[in-house]
Length: 367
Image (cartoon, rainbow, N blue to C red):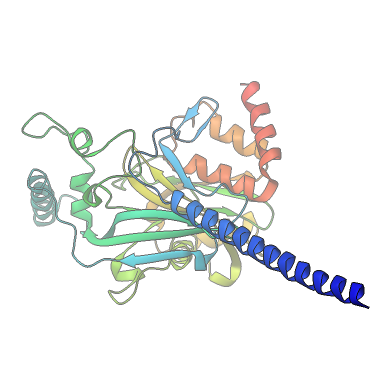
């Protein structure tokens, strides 16, 4: 009895010891997991100097200035994972650039008074203060934080003169931009954020647009199906931050006369044109009922922003067909910078990365 009692007491003590050690080990492991996850979230926030090793999008002989900052096409970015904040205070140009904006304003006033051309409307826009990306700790889903400031179109046009000489002989590109830190730039040089949408019809045709010859930026270049810039008056009315999915839906209505119930929408990526400092949210839209012929017929009956496009093409949404279209000699150097990356991401979203890369490589080999 005494031996059994002693063994029982010893067993109970050992049980308590092992339970305590197991619990402590589990707590230590969970603490390490949480600490590692938190570290991963911090490390994925972009900081100055981290972009030097990144390359812009290229496909065979086609090279663009589009830097894919977040997203690979495989996994859409959820609407609730995009956080947009509008900061107080409009963008102010440095003293060196203020005269350039004054020149633009004076020229547009002269054109309006003379009536020799339609003046450029000084629309209310947004400038990009910062774009930061973190990862959620459990499934590593992206969380995108976009901070904007109010600006206008004349400020954008002035800041677009990145290679114009200043009085001291420098340029805005050389003075304020670091080629080794493409994600870091003053907001006054990033007065453009828009959405680009790759639209695929119900019978699997990719819609490709050609920009009008009268548009101010990239006239005559082949582009995404839909391209729409954020506008303060239309997308927030000064009361709330813009919703990027809502901007994409507005673009679909204005450029292709499509209603929200006629398509599905997926946010694929955030992309920066490092040459022009223009930011874009890249979307994929699938029409649920309209075929290519039906969409042609609808747009022939009128769309609100017809002047933005001079032509529309419909290409079979197969990797080989789209790649051949992108790389054709007559178009290879006639693409708006952000469009090729958009179409590649849309193909990956539908067909998968491995399949798309094999088919693209096969087309490139045959050039």
